[in-house]
Length: 305
Image 1: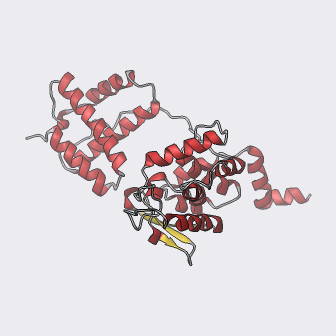
Image 2 (image 1 turned 120 degrees about the horizontal axis):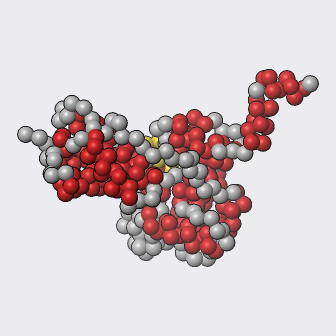
Image 3 (image 1 turned 90 degrees about the vertical axis):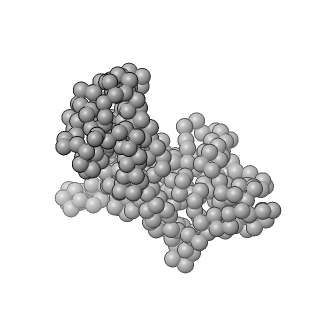
């Protein structure tokens, strides 16, 4: 008897969580896409089982979804999810061949992230009102995002015991619960300490070990951090569309621009693949030329002539 859509979906969900170690958000996105595929097959293709779906069925589904979406990235994610789904069924022995193998993804142009200059980051920090109860906390948050290149999910789950002062590192729990050590500078530590002094004055602390808390003594939500940064950007007069992730992009870009080793940046960001980190090499040609002249032995010889 062929596996049902519900059984396949449940098994695929476990596969993504346990074997692929994807984040809850990524798992949810993949499962939502597979639910749409299952609904389409039941509605249009006579209720075929997952194992009976053909290349033509998948192509027709993508064509229908594509007509409702202008985003090539949305289609690319959808195709990636379908391929993963049928790879799972292949591994489970439910199918002998994946019908998604020949499905082509739309070509995506290089999407460069928004990056803040050091002057813009300083303007945002200067826009923080330290006379308010949350002032030192917000300043420490900005310094942690920019000084350590954290994702917002990593920031809100950061614990006091994750800060290793003597060693100059924080222990970060990233995607798939993978942990990494990220160094921090003296400014970041100073702002953390300033915040910790005010944190002790909270009337109630519900999450004792969580570093960044709201005024009710509970851990912050992602939305709270997004809202805080948007408000600060408005106060600083910055027109760029920015988010907590913009500080992570700025952290990596500024390191690369100043000559940091790409592998070291990859390690600090927690990227599995160096190709993900390579987006931060979107540098101007004059910088690249200057790098060549300074570090390539043939270029140095030409410079001396």
